[in-house]
Image (cartoon, rainbow over all chains, first blue to last red; front, side, top):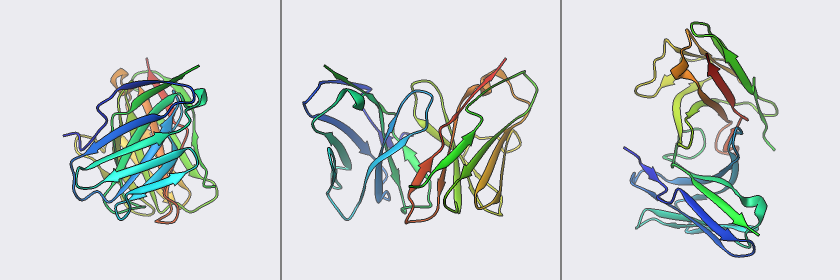
Length: 113
Length: 115
């Protein structure tokens, strides 16, 4: 049972444009969400997170939006840069730090020149 | 920022032997450490959660006698793959949490190949 889903396995965007990565979840107990960036043969790198009490969190070029009623979150990257090309995972937790994360299947983002 | 060191980054071992992977939190005390496994082009699957000084909690379907986890101190957790077989070949990643203020920090992963 995949509780966190990223339905787009890949996304291709031109440099300078906006990248929008989507994530859906089914477990209503999730209250903390995170986005990670991962290169091959490396561990995930934390990008940005959001608590369920918020609907938006922004950090530089990265913004995460949370729609609790739809159980949907998205990561916006603007402007996209070639160095953003990587696999992006969304993850969810039921009780914040210290509790296990459930990961989505990942979206391969390719930012083209 | 929080740093987690995972060692080795890559290991090749013969079928039937055991391999130990270390995960260290370098600049914070990790009350909880997590071990994940990732198959090619798939998600990170949580294998087990370990808290310092207590037995690890394994996810359903993960053999605890095969994947031995030790979390003897607040800065070190180890995963030992015992009697490794080719199907154990995978990318193993640890992460550490120091509590609500620290979030989760991942190690750089270990590529295990069993031949």
